[in-house]
Image 1: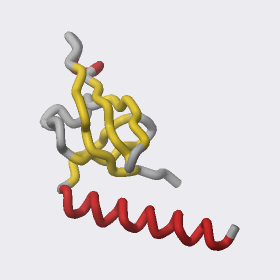
Image 2 (image 1 turned 90 degrees about the vertical axis):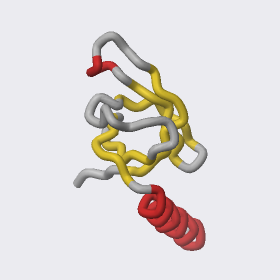
Image 3 (image 1 turned 60 degrees about the vertical axis):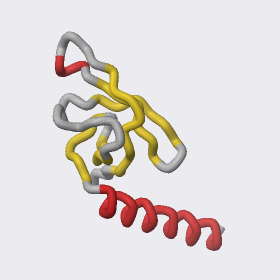
Image 4 (image 1 turned 90 degrees about the horizontal axis):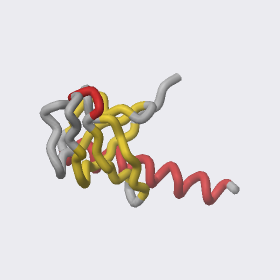
Length: 82
């Protein structure tokens, strides 16, 4: 099973080698550095789907917000259970 999570690009770090292009991505308050080599068209403010530290595709904001809302709902349910 694989899990990919949406996040918003906060900043982009350009590199001489396009395979080393990275950015800071916000996952609902958790910010991680992510490799952006697979999404060369991605810009600051875009939402991307991230798997294993690599952004693998862009996602429109409405869809990203819907997924983030569902994740938050799952977190709420898990807190009620424990």
